[in-house]
Image 1 (tube, rainbow, N blue to C red):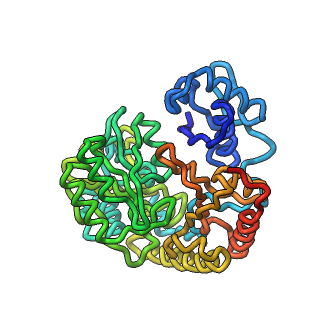
Image 2: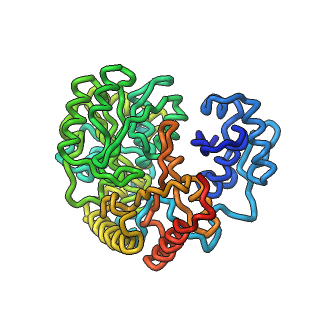
Image 3: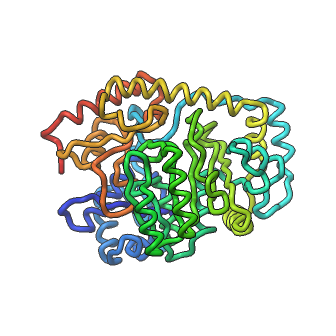
Length: 442
């Protein structure tokens, strides 16, 4: 069953219509793909704080629009329609990637990877060599004995949440955060509580207030190229966050999935609070989407629990993929790909700043995505829909909002278009929408 716990559009429409609108938005954006099984009426009602009857009406409205179909005894599914959510000709500015040529798998690497096919069941364990490669990837003198290999960074987020919080408990997060973390929290029945940010990232004073109130014992944060805002938290702020966490006994989950784009970056929070920080990284965005390999560097007391979460979810990470990843890290292929990604991100940022001007200025120029604030005449969902009608897919702030307050903004993934020319075309369309007052919906 698909994990789906949407942020509802801010409008005067009945709740069931707003749920159907959110479902249509996520189908059009490709967040929900054809054939996805939606949550049961009871589960979605519990996640949204509404009644099952309201969900029934919402699913009925979605069916009327041709978005879903129900099958007795099997549930409700996103309908496979003639109109694909990502039709040929659409420009993707929704997927957070940097498009560069896919690396080649050499015969030698394939032979070594094939040798792992008869690997024994190892229940959450990883080979010493694969852990050492993960430590080298993470850098900062990471201890390989504290590294576990996961099935991608999304899986690393899952096992980190499961290892540090129990159902019904609360995890603190930036007021806007990675939508995949929201999905994990919903699946595990963990509540997310928003903490305010400024231009340097998470506010230490807000974390301290939460610590004093004992509202949560875990913080999930993305200090390097924060998703979705693109902020890079400076070293001073990272030290302050670590000090507050130490003072109030808060465990930190530090997601560094986009940190590879920063050639020079402040030390991770984990380096200031190593005994209470789970540091997460991965290779899907950095190297190739099909390399579903991630890493968790955990404090020694938490290692057994993280290992048991890996075993409970996937038994053990694919040794074949881990071997490919390890080979690329060892022979320098990973470093070469990262250099290409950084150069491409820099080029695309220059293009974006030339076209968008000051609108792009708040995001770090090394980021693969931009956080664009909208004029008051636009709501984020209305702007996203206006872009979709013009065959450009962007991500509404409602996909990232942790609390009920949704910023008037959208995220543009400038690394996703297939070429710089396609990026320029998409950005010019975005600029054109921004100037069309008559279509704005507040």
